[in-house]
Length: 126
Image (tube, rainbow, N blue to C red; front, top):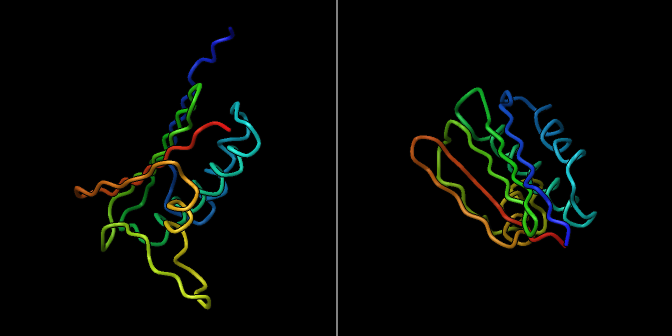
């Protein structure tokens, strides 16, 4: 039986729009099945974009851990005006779907606010 080693990535990104694309491309060199890869890229892009739009600070921390069974992603920023929450969506809404998508796609997710805001999700490798 082949045992995969854990892959770990940590990045500090500026709180600028181009950081969402940089975060998405972190997964390009990681060993993930296509479906898991697409979901991880989408959800990471959404969380980094939320940080860009809502955070009060100048930097975003991105941590990715790819294990044999799961991929775990955490995005941490310097805080915003409120605690992250899934918003009720109307058909005509043009924004605000980030955590809605995380809630719908991730196997697990959560957040922690203590002056800084951290939002994480976990996906099973599939």
